[in-house]
Structure formats: structure tokens, C-alpha cells
Image (cartoon, rainbow, N blue to C red):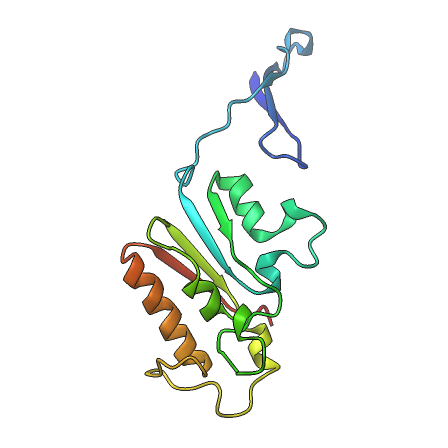
Amino acid sequence: RWAIQEIVDFTDPSNRYIRIADLKQPTNNKAWTKALKAKSKFEGKKLITVGDSITEGVGASNSNTTYPAYLKNKYGLNVVNTGIAGATWANYNDGYDDISIIHQVDNTNFSDADFVTIFAGTNDFGRQNGDTIGNTTDTGKNTVKGAMNYVIGKILTQNPNVKIAIITPMW
């Protein structure tokens, strides 16, 4: 006989309204009430997003449609976005090393982060010649695998308990 109805404002999902509806007598329906936002287990946790243009938000329709902003708004995370368009994992000594993932990590304090995402790799494809992939044991900064090992090691040295998610190119 009774149902809980909900309205969600999709431009701001934190704006939710609920009411109890009487299915047998709709005239008894209660007024809409602003719903309390359920607290996320991630609320107040710190996320540092490292990456390229996708992380920075290039091409997003507005600043609230980037993936870091989405995670902030949906889960209540405190987000620090270090993404820079054009960033690569490796340093290729081509004049762009100051925007690489290595550079971002070398200039970021991870000691109080709970989570880190690293979204990169697309820009490395355009700069690779056959020898820049590297191998699993590389720790140098001029191969993709070496840069990945360096970056993950650097973050874990500052904060051994941080959770790291690596997001690879979408294609």
C-alpha cells in the first residue's frame, strides 16, 4: 500500500527529495522532503589525481564533469588534481619533461593521501620508438615501465598505506 518515492536532481545528485506515497489513496501522499545525504565511507578522505588531459579536464563540458570532480561530488572526497594536458609517463628529453607524470609525482606530497589515481599512457604512444616501453625491472625515467616503477615507488615511499589505482588509455 505504501511506497517511498524519490526525485533526484541530475545536475546536482546531492539534491534529493523523498516522500511516502499512499498507493490506495493518492490524496494522502505526504509532502516532498529534502532527503539527507547518506554519508559515503569515502567522505573526507583525500584523493590525489595524477595524469594527462583527461585528468586535467580538457574537453569536459564544465569543471564538474571531469572524473576527479565526479569522484569528489559523488563520494565526498577531498580531491587534489595535478593532471596536466600532454603528460606522459616517461621523460623523453623532448622539452616536455616538466609536465610528465614523474614531474607531477616529484612535486606532490602524498604523505596524507588515502587514494591516488594515475591516468596516463595515451601521450606515450605518440612519442615511443620501439625501445621506450622498457622492461619490468626498469627504474629509469626514460621508459614507460621504468617511469611506472619509479612513480609507484616514490608514492609508496612517502605513504606505504596509500591505495593506488592505475587507469590506462581507453583504447
